[in-house]
Image 1 (tube, one colour):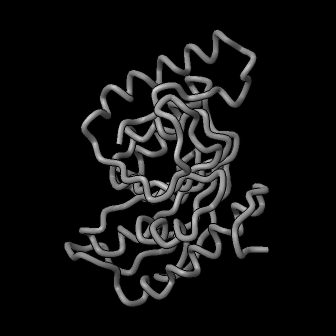
Image 2 (cartoon, rainbow, N blue to C red):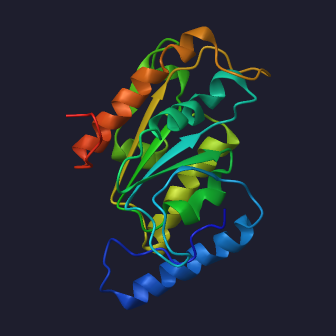
Length: 210
């Protein structure tokens, strides 16, 4: 997938100077991101130069490292059925290279394994806007820290999402293994339900969720 090349400035769409600076900054990372792999799990069809959906759900993690991949698994499950106005992406371990996908969104919801300081393995955690942007609760892995840097880059470029949240679970086992542990696999539905609740709070119409 080719990253978006012209992110909208949702913070102030009337500021042409700010929008141009944001687009230029995003374009630099877009060029660097060519050849990387970000799987579109669910996105409404759009023209090549058309806008992204206003809301992004981003699954983060490495499925080759056991429970590290829980965010990607949860995003995959959330993607069916489609949610109007929402793109669901498998961000894998790209970290900072995700900046072009974050830029210009109205809201970004991250699904990921969280730091063990948040509780016991299997505990569900919802982290609010400010804490996510500051990296509170984010694990000390290259892709998680890179995601925080990507969010900071959108702030500096004037194209930051207005709302950010993270829904995740405390992992049981991060090891060289494909697939989740039984405990964390049993918590995926809870992550998806919590994600749908956050989207509903953001006034997204989620099918089957009141």
